[in-house]
Amino acid sequence: MQILENQSLESCNTLHFPCRAEFFAPVRDVPELQELLAWARQRRMPVTVLGGGSNVVLGEELPGLVILNQIQGCEQIRGSGAQPVLRVGAGENWHQLVLHTLAQGWAGLENLSLIPGAVGAAPIQNIGAYGVELAQCFQYLDTCAIADGSVRRFELADCAFGYRDSVFKNDCRDEYIITSVTLQLSTSQVVNTSYAELARELQEAGIESPTPREVSDTVIRIRSAKLPDPAEIGNAGSFFKNPVVGAACYARIRAQEPNVVGHLQADGRYKLAAGWLIDQCGWKGHREGAVGVHDRQALVLVHHGGGTARELLHLAERIQARVAERYGVSLEVEPRIYA
Ligand code: FAD
Ligand code: NAP
Image (cartoon, rainbow, N blue to C red):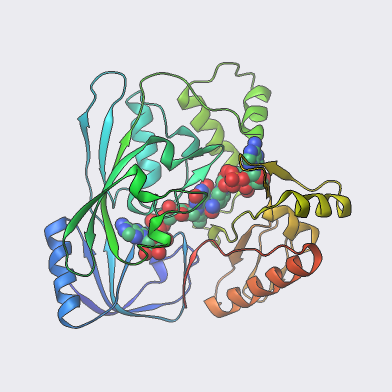
């Protein structure tokens, strides 16, 4: 195992904030991970794991040991027929996995194309996009406990997946490192085009019965046109979760703003588009020194370079305060803050 001291994490987070890890180690397999955990345990150090760093906000320093998950591997373990089951190392790149499954003729992940980051982080917030969530093709995941290095398997029911949520953000927060994720895919060509923007784009392209590959290509096209590429401008995707509010709150806002975007949920509540609320408050394209709000998608906060997490979080707080004041709705930050 290779442990580096005082390592820069600037290239390990897509907001590109300068941050130094007290200790830093890449990890390539489970025994090496267990060794690293024992090393940190002996020194009573906190442990933080990173994948692609696309859903974190890093302050100037991360104390303790930062582990970069690079556990590779992608193996079809069951289901040679209609339902292939794939066990994937947590350090594999998510989008490359999506492309790999499509190349094999397997459906299930196409709507989740072009989401940055590693496979091991996907269950943390139950990644979702264009009408599909990870939970829909998830079977189980394997972990190492940070406390003692023991291995534990989490089945679907153990993960308590919700809207951009899981047990790993709640009861089991900071307790486990995910080492592999097992997914159940399909050889059928059935696709989900329920998301309005996706359906519209397919229709405009004259594609009536899209294949999974065509859905993926379309999602990639929509995303590339709308979302800032972290290689070009620092960002962590959506900075706030879409708030889900009661029917009375939705009716009140609708009376105030007849064009408000609200999606009825199974429980009778409404999911509001946080980006729309932020836009209505006049923040879209706003810039304050090194940080700002993206000019095509107000839900994405950006770092133009030379700034700090503190500046971005200050801007985020002001946005939250303004949206709360105008609509009585509180916005929850989506990325994990280490600052
Ligand atoms: P990191 O940022 O490295 O980590 C995020 C959190 O997960 C941290 O708390 C970390 O400690 C923890 N973690 C990481 N790996 C492990 C592990 N192996 N075991 C235990 N804990 C771990 N998200 C969506 O849901 N849908 C989208 O459509 C979407 N689009 C995005 C678009 C852009 C341009 C960007 C920048 C982000 C987007 N995201 C989206 C957010 C992000 O890409 C996902 O949440 C992704 O899964 C994060 O992966 P990561 O490897 O970068 O995680
Ligand atoms: P959008 O199409 O402008 O829509 C705004 C919001 O409305 C979305 O966030 C979506 O919620 C919701 N929505 C739209 N149609 C819906 C429907 N038929 N039923 C229920 N909810 C609906 O969103 P966008 O910003 O361009 O993003 C497109 C997709 O990519 C979304 O699914 C979004 O979640 C995902 N995305 C996520 C991130 C991230 O960092 N988390 C970043 C970029 C894009 P949902 O978010 O629940 O889908």
